[in-house]
Amino acid sequence: MKKMKILTPEQYRKKGKRFHKAEKFFTGPMYALMKKRNASLRKEVFVETGKNKIRTVWYGLNNPAPSPLLIDLHGGGFILGSPEMDEKMNITWSRDLGCRIVSIDYPKAPDYPFPGAVEQIYDVVEHIFDHAGEYGIDTQRVAIGGHSAGANLATVTCMKAKSTEKIRFVCQFLNCPPLDLATTALEKPHPRGSIPRKMSFIFDNCYLNGADGRHPYISPVYAHSDDLKGLPPALIIVAGRDSLHDEGVLYYNKLSENGVDAQLLDYPGGLHCFMLKRSVISKDAFDKASGFLQQHLQQESV
Image 1 (cartoon, helix red, strand yellow):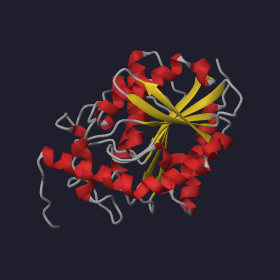
Image 2 (cartoon, helix red, strand yellow; image 1 turned 135 degrees about the vertical axis):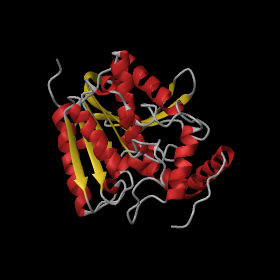
Image 3 (cartoon, helix red, strand yellow; image 1 turned 90 degrees about the horizontal axis):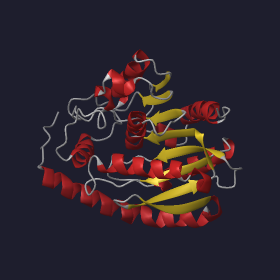
Image 4 (cartoon, one colour; image 1 turned 60 degrees about the vertical axis):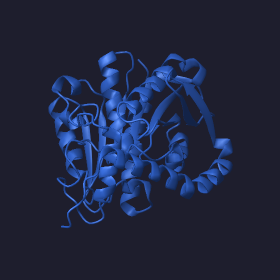
């Protein structure tokens, strides 16, 4: 294997900035068209957190209030992405599950490294709970989920909510989550089709920015039992051709050992976040995830 050059923190930061510029160039026109096409199905709301103004995108606002709510956190390696990545899925789920969905455009590294996204996501969630009547949601039927980096942030938000005892989620949905940022890409399995190691190094270093990778809010696989006990039911999807596969399985085992009602869907032939692309196995994963969310979101309020 060719030796990979390890860069300085500032060099990783500069590369992360270049990723931002490239993303805007390539996705800007496509997302502008998407927003126009789906104008009647979405609504953008900006939430003041005290630290920043966070864009959120809502779907299913025509569903009867008070409605169940799914909080969606998109992927992008902690430095890229936007709610528009998940728009098609969120429109479908808001219709099929009869719920409202809010997708949070959380702040990204390198400008906002850890704990920026963790803190501001929680601030937005807290705001939504505090203003549940205005948003037309039933706070006893709120789920949270995400894809890739968003899945990491979803389960971390569950841990943070448990520690404050103010917010309760009925379940968590984690699609191909990165859960061990303390172990470098060079030390992880790298099956054919995995995220390139150089890219993983940029993602992780921009997000960590010198923080301890074993912090449970960065790498949930290192969380103590007290952090895990009492977390909401979890559905974890992992892909065999993804370098993140093993840490997803490890986290599933840790949740189960600590009494969490956890389910694991393991697709040996799947690539990272295959569920977001059209295929036979993505349909199977989507259908099972839909059933899981339906089961928990449509239960009777206590």
